[in-house]
Amino acid sequence: MTVSGEFIAFLALALVAIIGGVLLLNLTKVVHMVVALVFTFLSIAGLYVLLSAEFLAVVQVLVYSGAISIIMLFGIMLTKHNDEDDESHSVGKWKRLFLLLGILAFGAVFYIGIYDLDFGTTPVALHENNAEQIGMELFSKYVIPFELMSVLLLVAFVGAIVLSRKDDDEKEAEKE
Image 1 (cartoon, rainbow, N blue to C red):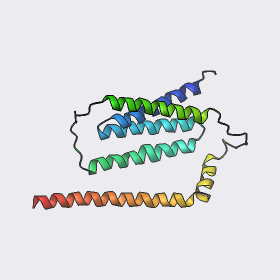
Image 2 (cartoon, one colour):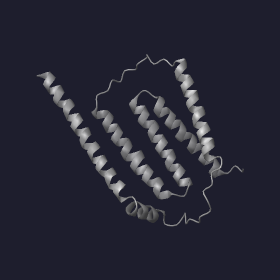
Image 3 (cartoon, rainbow, N blue to C red):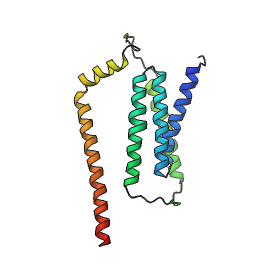
Image 4 (spheres, rainbow, N blue to C red):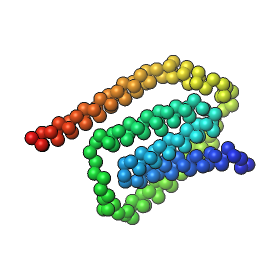
């Protein structure tokens, strides 16, 4: 195995993605979690660039790093949350044991999954018209799930508005 610039870039981006995911799970302040999530999204976009999927990288940056992160920040601002640090989090022996067992189980499953992996030798035109190929697949085979996802996002958005309205109504009722 030779060490090239592409290999070093892959290792750096993969490390940032993994660290961002771990930080997302372990941080206690919600805003810090969103920042870790943004770093994870951006590093995944970099991995897409390394795979010559520039369209997916741009969509990753625009949709996830931009829109989803902004929506999460708006959700943080619209909801009530206590920003006080809870110092009662003590890491017990059982939690560390289960974490170690989980990591070992993940490693074992990952190793077994890729040990004899064979994708075949079907020729695929990779670097030709990425956006067109994605569009043809998305709007031919996956048009129903695509439309259902848009409806689901709309329902979630309306639900967030209704929940924030209920909080405002409850505050006004308490004041009176």
